Image (cartoon, rainbow, N blue to C red):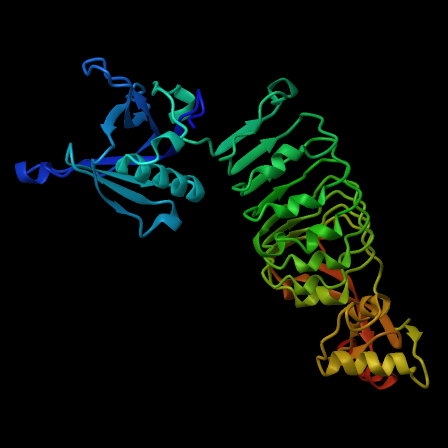
Length: 429
């Protein structure tokens, strides 16, 4: 039974190709237009006792009234090989045109084609929910909006949704205290800029934005970074992350699971340490953590291969290679022996095999200069690292023109530490 006031519609790009043009030595334009296709009824007053005829109506921005094509018995062929890519072609008998569809929602396209087949056969017409055809509104045929910039509260949409087609969204200076959940429905979003707001916490559902490659959270009130985000789809998509000018004191260990990161900005926070496994960010090329409270860099930092690094204005300690912190366990505990063997032989582990606290300990395993692992039995010293060893361009770390920063160094035994001391004294003679 027909549903009153309803028309089967499809929004996509359409190109109508006249198959007769080549016979006159003419070519088609070869370019699609944004359009709305409708399947509906049109009353033909010239035919007596005719209730209605089903037509395909194609409306574009230039022709909002649209062009109608009769459907019953008038479709010569459907071309649906690429329907999973949102593409299809409908070949009509009269007039001799091919209606080429592209950039359509796959599910909507399949439903639309099914309705076209029913209308063509003229069967089960009463089961098709159709109404009278009418011209479309301008908003329906405009090109989907891919970018939106909002920089004041008065422009912020309160009663309308964000366009579903957005790929870039900037909402700044709007005093947002939290992330609007409507933003998290924008599945095509590639860049989200929420800088200069009052956001305190990030929802874990940001991780559901599977296309998100840039996230800008500059100048907010963030105090933590969600562990859930570190294990979300952002692991495979996020390349640019700006957390500068917040209130972060630390980042979770799991942060280094965001291994697609290329550009990371942590300036002007209250960071007391960097993620222990930061060296796992093998694609990271631009890193800045200026004006924080870092006393030293994690040992893993020297594994990075950067193009630019900025660590200016931190509270770096003076290196003390001759004043080690000795935490050796003699004899070693069974836990220490087992942990070293697990890492050394690359034995897989996880919460489904080991207790969670042991997994966390293994994630924090240190690496000696001899490349052997150590867990709780080690010698720790702070030495200087020339930042040119990890980065092509180095911003000076202080007003004295320095390019060295203190870094933690671990030794698994007295033997390794003694060998380090020998090399240290030889260099400083």
